[in-house]
Length: 167
Ligand code: HEM
Image (cartoon, rainbow, N blue to C red; front, side):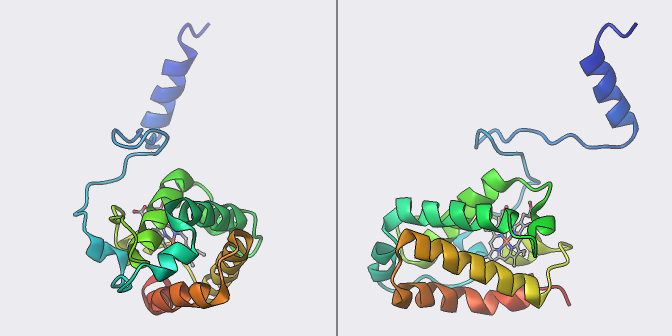
């Protein structure tokens, strides 16, 4: 009889070379990531010059709602759901909201990794990028973000396609 089934399971996984995700010390509910240099330069574009678009997104709360909604939508989107499987979506929702807030000249810093390192080896193609943009448009519509403001964010994100899509 195995007296300590949890310990036995852990040992079996570790011996098989399976890494167990460690919890993040800084962000409860997230997994730890390898150390990297934190910088707003990792956000991949310069922020806007005024807060008008930030306000059109209903500030930080509105941006967090858009970030949550686009990721939930992407995970349920059969075109791209596979790509998101087994990733820490709590972290993605938090850092994506920071990134959007920073780009819209809101009072936020981006604490995530740069776009190249983040999306390396995910195998993302142009069609996947376009699908995510559609999911983002759906999320912005749900939030009631005016089209003009939606397009300003999309214009900031568009050049990142080159970095995110795999050659
Ligand atoms: C301009 C477009 C995009 C932006 C701004 C963006 C932004 C982000 C951010 C901020 C993160 C988290 C960074 C971190 O953990 O430090 C992330 C992770 C991720 N993104 Fe994107 N992303 C974009 C496009 C895409 C596309 C097109 C896909 C797939 C269809 C995708 C799939 C993922 C996945 C699976 C992760 C998790 C990676 C991991 O856990 O290591 N992203 N993205």
